[in-house]
Length: 440
Image 1 (cartoon, rainbow, N blue to C red):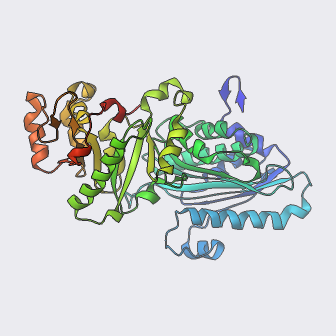
Image 2: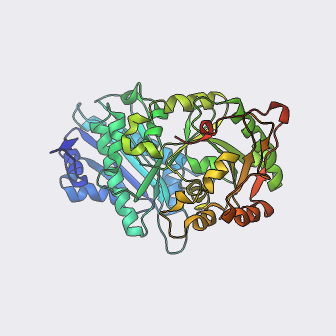
Image 3: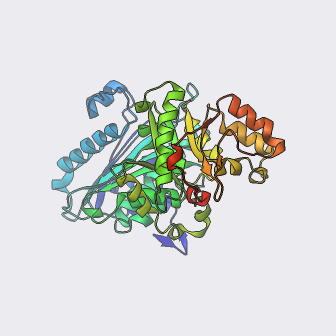
């Protein structure tokens, strides 16, 4: 909903919902106060919309209300689903008979781990709303995962309150415009306060909605720097997929996926687990597509992105779509909260690009600062050779000619095992255009 060309403020969104006599529901929040409910109460007329506001902080009380979590963790999707199940069933059972037949009911819930002085844990949470898009309809649902980036608990609470109101408001006013609903989640939130790295729509209000496309929108609309997909083609919350696993990444455009790229992945999957002395089951390998250069031109510029995701997942690959232009940003993303090891599969031509000083002009420490960030968590470059066109010469990680002023740096990385040479079958090696393996 727009007013005078600008988005509607959070306070006004809450007031609009409170002013609708046909919307009635429950707000249940665990982990960061009752900020969503507070937005409705501050807006006025909240008693017309909020039947109940509840927080169950005590674990025993929470278990009594929403069931015992077998994992022992409370900031999970399953806990959120239990909250929505319980509260939606309860609101309909208790008040449906006494309300207008035009009423539509909802249950909002969140379970979050906000900033604490006692812990440096990742600040994140699950949030969702179950609602009727029309009187008497079967419920629909939106569930999302959020990472909170504010530095203080108070600011994180505030951003969650705004996000929650945006979600409820979008469910009731933009249900037939799912992409606009996604974009509106960050209304009144400046960039850098939150990231939404997973979202899922279901129910009769969202017939025809494509969850894969909407998760891609999280990146192309700058709500998140990373979204991930499993080989079944479904979006997944990154932390779930990365839990206790090392990471192998091949970046490319994948227009199309080539035999060279297939061989690069095969070689990487052989070398990386052996180098780490771990089982291949402990390593997840991604085909990664970077869209950073397109974000300033609008989401429609990445016209075939979903098609390429489908192609790669149907071939059995995990897929990442990111807005991290530089490789060291990828390394920082993976190591921000877990000290997992990362392998980047590259061609020798990609290595030349990484060693090009001009890419680091904006950094005070130049290439040395970038290299420090890239290799912070024992990141390794797995370098695939190339056959020089017209000559029977193979360029490898060992004989790559690097600029003279960087040779000692390069030799240091090779000597300490940060650069590993991949060794494909020479008989199958053919010259390839390095542009095929680059990002967008």
